[in-house]
Amino acid sequence: MAIGYFYMILSLLCFGMIGIIAKFADARECRPSAVYTLAYAWSVLFGAVFVVLFRGGDFHVPAIVYAIALPFGVASAIGGIVFMAGIRYGKISTSWLIINLSAAIPAIASVLLYHERISARKVAMVALAVISVILLWKDKQADEARQLNTSVSEEIA
Image (cartoon, rainbow, N blue to C red):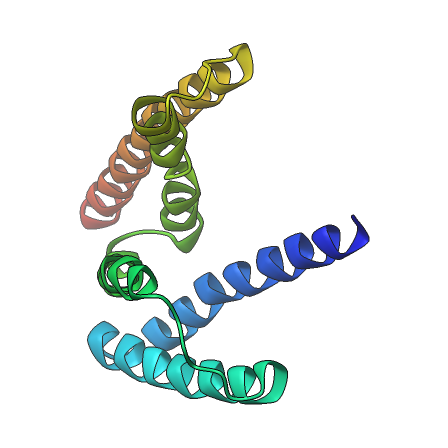
C-alpha cells in the first residue's frame, strides 16, 4: 500500500508542475503548440528509456493498448495546448482549477458507462464541481467589473 501513496504524491507533484511550467512558458510568450509538441516528443523519449531500463526493452503490447493510447494521446495533446492558450486570457489559478474540476467528467462517465453505484460522495463531488464553476464565473465577472471601474476612474483623473 505504501507504493500507492508514493505514486499518488508523485502524480500530484508532476501534474502540478505542468501548470507551473505552462505559465512559465506563457510568460515567455512561447507558442502553446510548440511547447506541447516538444513536451510530447520528450515524453516519447523518456517513455522509451523507461521501458528499456525497467522492462528490458520489451515494447510488445497488445493491440488494444494502441487503440486506447491513440485517443488518450490526442485528448491529452489537445487539452494541454488549449489549456496553455487559455491561460493567456485569465489567471493560472482559475485555469488550473477548471482543469481539476474536470474530475467530474470521469465520475459521471463511470456511472453511465461502467454502471458504478451512485453514492452520496459522488453526487456531492459533482455538485461541488458545478458550484465551483459558478463561483469562478462570478469571480471573473467581479474582476472584470473592478478592472472597468479602475480604468474609468483613471481616465477621469
